[in-house]
Image (cartoon, rainbow, N blue to C red; front, top):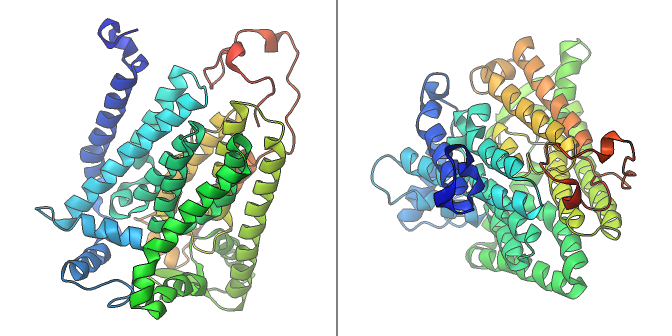
Length: 438
């Protein structure tokens, strides 16, 4: 059906019209409601820090050698990219994040199509990304995590459409923005190996990680110590006040079973003392264990998977890995939830709707305490603490919901199961794989 023959209610059936509509929706949300009322009341933003870094780079200073920077070179490039534009730096930076939001939404649409989802779900997935700032709050325009979300979304699109050069390139960009996507290398490797063989996967992974290493070489050559301190900074960070481990300690504190001390360091508010140090160590071990378990399960499942189930398993691997990092990480800043945008509406099967609902709930609970009640949380007030604990419990429930199953469940044979499909996937029975997706 051509775009010219579409009815007024069928605009979303045209790929170009859908892309234009989702882009326009994202721009409207960003430029109008996100700037008004509750959203426009002000946030605890990091833009002044980004502006200072950009100003130093614009004057010839180099990160890691001439000034400390806690982020990889890709983040520094984003800060600098907002510098030359006319008008306030904050407006230019916000514009870059809007562009990242649109890229994320369009890549999600492309991935949903590659997974074989129906038109309604494809449109719903893109629209959900476009309106997501209303669920999270205006702080998304004062952090650069939307750029990471865009890189992750493009990586997913490249992998599910079997453009693995694009997937590995986007992953490298993501690592250079934040180091977090390093945890996704095993998942992408085993999926690439399943589709194209071990040699192709090894070449792709080697080229991607090699590009990351090359990006660091000039900085390491000029200041090896300053570049190393980037990694040391994150290794030394204490248990941040909003992390999953901190939520456990908050609950014990509210019950009168444990005292807590809050301090400001490493650019955040953290819990200090023996108990937080123990929980921080456990969190790091747990994060590695969870990611490892996900890789093992998905690798086993991929041996028996055929298209499009193999691509959907890869999406589950990425989604569960990202959620595991949120749940078990020793730092969980509000903007980290942005990482879920590329996968929130792409998890296959009936549980896809549950995953989307839990992501939306986690977003809303985050906005409920951040930023208006954040300093109450720092003061350990019961109300903000309860909201934080509930948010972190929601993330645990999300991890359970998205966790890859060891084996494919047997397809139902009931009369209802043989009826025409009307599921959230929007798939017809003939478009489904021979086995139920995870």
